[in-house]
Length: 490
View 1: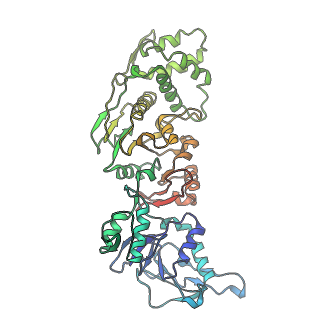
View 2: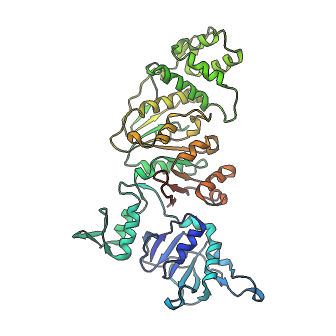
View 3: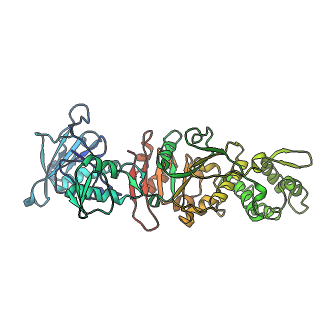
């Protein structure tokens, strides 16, 4: 029995794809597979093979599948309770003479069509079944994401090759033999394993990953960057990346080595990251004041601000309170002893983890953005992932201020840097940032965050809220104007 995914992006597309194969198929509502005894061509994407019948539900599913006789001769087909997500619903078109107008349907607890219990129904009844099932259509998306230079087209070509048994392919794949440019399948399992879940770094480009605490975001990030070039800026409270990846260095920047303009930008970003979206306590007057003091050494910065004759007292208090985070010690005259991590330049070469363990959010934001500014000035010879987990801790929350990560996302793949930003608080980020990231992955979320994810994924928010540990839904776009490639957790 072949196991397939359906890459449907809407309820209508799901119904259309399931009705078109012209062969008997089963909809495995327990695991989200399409089952078929014969190979199916794209858009169905092969996920695996099962040699033996598998038990998919306890007891016998409710029958009938469809009560297609309308009450008192009125109304359309009535769908039975078996459309609940368990067991298998089998669909079988009745021959070429019926031209798809009549079908047989049945239910089973096994990955094997039943001998008894088939019903003869109209295509309208089948469409009604699929309409009710389409609430769960997301479980039929292709499964998993792994970085493969051959890209997601490999999956479609491999599936077509399996259906035809031989043909031409653009890529070298396992499980096939080549003869004069024609590939022939010799090992189905090896072919399927080689092509499943493939996506190139260019297709993933930049990624946004959101989900509740302990949902599995870090595990997914680690699986994606495994075996790739990467730099992880680890600001997680427990150092989750530093503990399992390597080599690890302690993050720091030489603040004085930045230009005046860069220093102003770093301080501005730190203010913008530590304010709420609606926080008006730091006004354009104060942002402008930072430019006046950009050339002042850090040790004299607080003293200079305190003595500025034309700066309102409230602005002075707000600025000094924030900027004091950059000092290991401040005396009564506002003289600042810079924090040791602001005099330490880190040399980072992929693969590496940069651990930023400081807890103060203002200082953390300065260090993280400083590291990113240095990294992103160095073009890479091949695609390299730069990862920031808990991104909401350092992201600019003021709409008209752009941080280095956002700049890279907007500019594209210049320098071969590919951003992966992860957060459990997507509502704390600017909407403009989320909207420009082509690949987005969502674990379990609730409330407004679930509605945000549902709008992007084109699923009901309840689907996002009902995801279990380790389960996620994703939409992959390789660039603006490119079609979405929907994925889900394995």
